[in-house]
Length: 433
Ligand code: UGA
Ligand code: MN
Image 1 (cartoon, rainbow, N blue to C red):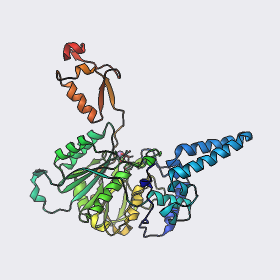
Image 2: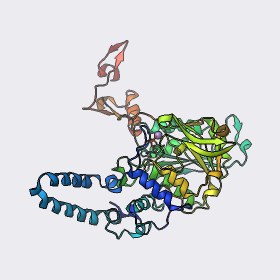
Image 3: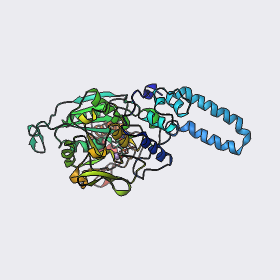
């Protein structure tokens, strides 16, 4: 496990408010509140999250101890061995989580174990981040049928999209790109959850002509094993780091997942954000919606079916932040804590209820939908390589499908490719050779 991922917390969270509420949240978590189906599950104890298998063994072991006393000694020894193993293998965070101390910067977070846990998951931004490619010039001549100059000096929207390799990735990004192509003065920060740079994606992003930055920002491997895993967090953190490294203090930040559906009016709404704006998001959990409650033009509360003690029970797609405002909070953070990313991010920028700007006609309209795509495995088609040459289109087609992670051809695996003519299946050789 690379120790870089366990950099000690050199900066505490900028929590301007009382710590009691933090403790409340932890209590709520401990009471096993569950986020409803379709939404992210709540945080899980550190050990379960990151060292699932060793601890699973421990739990099984203690059950056996109760049943068969003669197994006690070997099991105690095994337990001690496992603790020692974790201690020396996984480093500071495990030591902290095991209550063995010596956890570096995290230990000054609090005496309380759960508090330390929160500290670890919210450690200072120090992500593995590769800049794959960047296009800083807007190559579009017209947007929404108006020449680019008509948009003058509108503040730039930094649209942060975490994405990850799976069959749906390229179609999702294609669909999203075709929404963003209609939006002037936008910089698309695409942060891919993978080690290396995806060259196909570089070319694709360049081709759209929208100013963009393509980052490779993989989820730390220890978090990937967790259930639920903190999806899209490493990439959003990388994007925050990118913004901070460039000292970008002019513009609007919006976290736009690759699989959501965005109404074009959303962009004009968020562009006016002074500090933090909020609006309802459709398709969230049990109520089919999550968003602010507004009275007399002011946000007074929130409607969301999964509270879990969150002060800001909103969806990632339900708010936008002005970068100048955010710049006042150097400890901006988003924790690796499924279900609590939004709340803790908004806490890290010292948000107050009276500062929130309701958008979307006082939060009466849905301008963004939390749509989800069903995930399926990439297809394998049995199509002998001898037919995948220049004699037909199929060679080039399957090479490109493979690069996109959608389907691949195999000589030996998968259902045999059915080729037909005049409604009748025909031998590959008759059609392709
Ligand atoms: C919900 C929230 O809207 C997300 O903001 C939150 O990150 C996520 O739950 C969570 O906490 O797990 P949901 O639609 O359930 O989102 O999750 P996905 O769409 O699967 O993932 C959210 C974003 O992270 C997507 O843009 C996705 O491409 C990206 N992601 C997902 C990764 O970068 N890596 C992954 O392993 C999975
Ligand atoms: Mn999603």
